[in-house]
Image 1 (cartoon, rainbow, N blue to C red):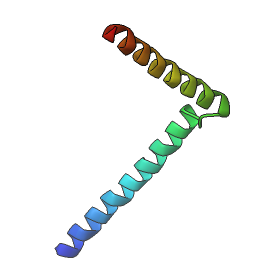
Image 2: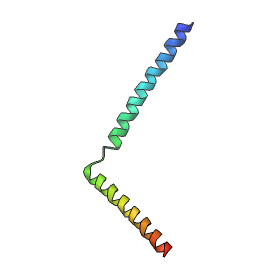
Image 3: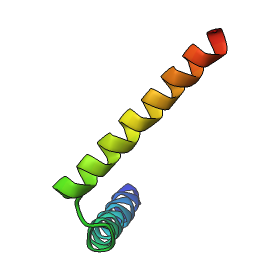
Image 4: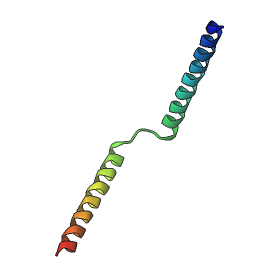
Length: 62
């Protein structure tokens, strides 16, 4: 009886691992890794946001 329960749980775990691998593959195909251009774009947007917040803080204090 306990062996059957263990086999059932291991079977569910195996199915879960297959689902996780399929999900990871699907996301990798749909969302490819970022390239150098995207990294530069995000860094530029971050610096712009930090600069605008800093400028807004300086204007609000004066």
